Image 1 (cartoon, rainbow, N blue to C red):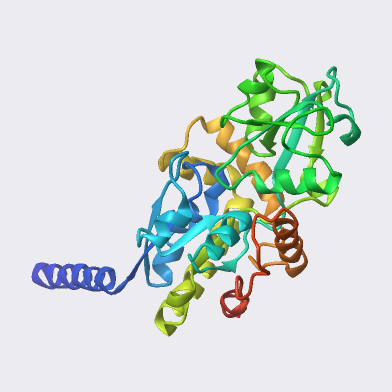
Image 2 (image 1 turned 135 degrees about the vertical axis):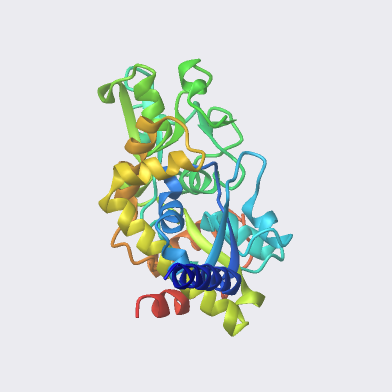
Length: 323
């Protein structure tokens, strides 16, 4: 009996080893550090959703000095999380990125100003200093200013642009009249710093119809021509969206999984997960074509890109993943 048990155990270990060896290895590069902004991917890995699809997924965190477009162009990732603005700019420069899924169906970007300051409406921006992040995050802001007819070169007839740090200090230290925040991150840093909601005037990009596509999934066009790779992307997207749905239904557990993977401040991650869930929409990961068109037009109007993009997105992967 003992020999039989040992034999069965050995067989089980051999099967597990064979399954591990058979799994297709994929690397995902995130746009920023490990936080609940990316909870769906960490959950999919932790709960075994990638394993169920026969995928061995490595998740690489990002940071201020990491450009996902450069990582994938250099072979350091198979799929990346990126904003559409940065992806289209990279595509025009020769990195053939294709949006294969769009987990974030709404944008989380906002502009906030002190309620007791000089800015109450968009008409008050002229002549003031506004903060925004760069590294591809500035495109929605510049599109908005272009829409308002405001120069971003400074002066009385335009606005002065402050290249903002990835925190809220420019507002606290009065270096800017307004700063950029994400609904799920920096906004709550201001609240934690002592501001109350009524102390802030908030301009929400989505509410104003100025939202451009944020956290989407992108792969290289030439790799997608390989049927096996494309099949792996279908599996990856299916498992990832399963991870997102689980995270939305179990936000506290999702935040704990993020913490296990390098997240900081559990209460902040739980609050972030609650806000991120509002941006995922129906959880299908399907790109909305009208928002894509608005994003591309905004970049063209600003001359951030020179040519109308072609082949920059596909529904093939999400169509298959949803079957």
